[in-house]
Length: 177
Image (cartoon, rainbow, N blue to C red):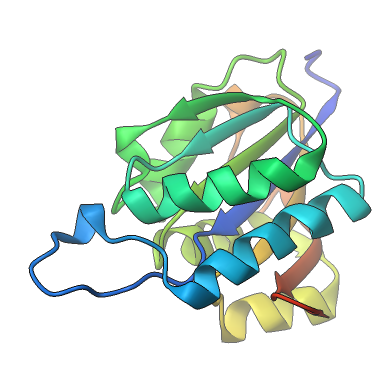
């Protein structure tokens, strides 16, 4: 991607997870609501024409299940990287992962966890849709999707330079904006 080109970052918090007894956090599966909401997130991304070229997904069970259900709705087959650094990552750690993205990728979907995903979105967003920013600040629930337009290259990603263009919470039958 040329330095003057922009990139699109799609940030998805995993769908609602279950809390089975005796299951380590990393291995927690999706709950029933999560299995309903994740496909809705995929359909919403397809409908708003925001399909990624590359997916960077946490290695946790709930994020991998979220991706499988989202992917089935996209109508595309992006490259997928299951990245251990995304699990329990802070905002700055997530930005470090994104800085390693090769410049050929123009639209990247990051699937991760709270509070890192919300903190990163708010850190990167130097402006954008005021209503979307207000909602992203107030709450970043499961299955929430933030779309940011980034200037320049992934390797030069810094706080306060992106534009938050949309924030939605797709649910099994509707989307909250």
